[in-house]
Image 1 (cartoon, rainbow, N blue to C red):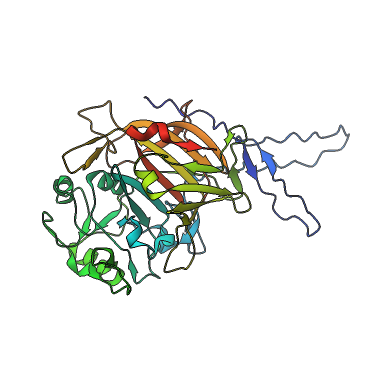
Image 2: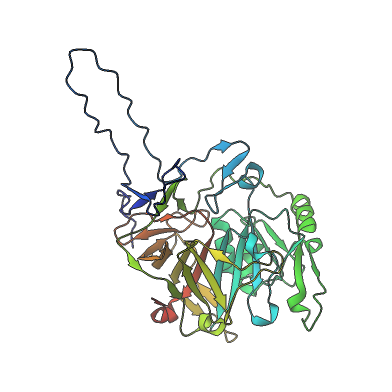
Length: 396
C-alpha cells in the first residue's frame, strides 16, 4: 500500500472560542475550515481615504514546528505543553507485563503512549513510553521484551528498558542500533543490573511480578553506558497533533464509543476494551472487568486517541513465540504497512499504517485517501492486532 501525496486534511477542526464573557453559555465550538480563512471584510465607498484593514493571522490547526514559551515546549508524545527539559529528553520505552497476577501497575499513568502487543495466542504485554518520570521512584513491574517491541522503541528514539528478552531479540538488543537498559539475563551482552530489583509488594505476589525498574538506578545506568538523553538529529515525530485551541472532530466519520480490540484471541483473554466518555473526550481502558488503575497515582488510565494497528504475524516455534511485522525491511519492500482503525472524539476512521522510511523512522497513520491523520492532544493507546484475529475487532 503506497502513501499518496498529503492532500488537504479532510476533517472538521473545531476552534474553541477564546475570551468569551461569563454570560456565554454556548457549548458548541465554532466550526473552522482546515485552511486559513481569508478576510471577506468589504470597505464601503467613501471619498475619504479608508483606514487600512488588517488581514487576520492564519489559524494554525496542527503543530508543525515546536516552540518554547516560558520554559515549556510541546511534547513529541502527547502534543501537550511540558517542561522544556522533559520535552527535549528522549523517552523510556518500558516492557510491562499484563497478566492479572501482576496488577496493579505502578506509574503507568505517567506514560504518554501505551502500546499493547500480542505475545502468544493467549497473552499480551504493554510497552509504555515515558518522558515524564522524575516524580516516580520506580516503574513496573517489568518483564522481558520481543524484537518487534524493540522496533517500536526505535521509532520513538527511545531508551529501551526491560528485564530479559526472548532469544529472537538478542541480536538486535546487543547491536549498536539500540540503547538498551536490561537486567542481566541470558543472551544480554551488556546488562545494566543496577537499574532493576525485586520489590516487596506484600500479599501473594510472586517474584516475577515483583520485578521493578528504579529511576535512580536507571539514570545512573544511562550515564554509565554513555547514552545521550538528546534526540538524534534524524528524529522524526510519530504523530501529527491538533494545535492549541483546535480539535480534530471528524464530524463526517462514524460514531464509535466502545472499542473491542478482539472478541477472540489474546485481547479477549485479558478482556480488553475502551469506552468513550463524551464529558471528558477521553477513553477509559478496561481489563479483566475493571478500569486499569495506577498504584502510584491512584487514578485510572484515560487516553485521548486509540489506534488498532493490524500487523502480519506468525508463530516462530513450538512455544508460540511470535514474529510480528513491525519494522521496515528494505530487502523486502512489500512489508511495513497494513490496515488501521483510528478512534478519537468518539469517532472512527478506517485507514492504513505505513512505516515508509526504515526502522529509525516511525510508522504513520493515514485515511483511505492517503491523508495523514490528525491526533488530538493527549495520551494515545496503540493496540497491535495479529492479523489472525483481525476479523474479531469490534466497535459500536
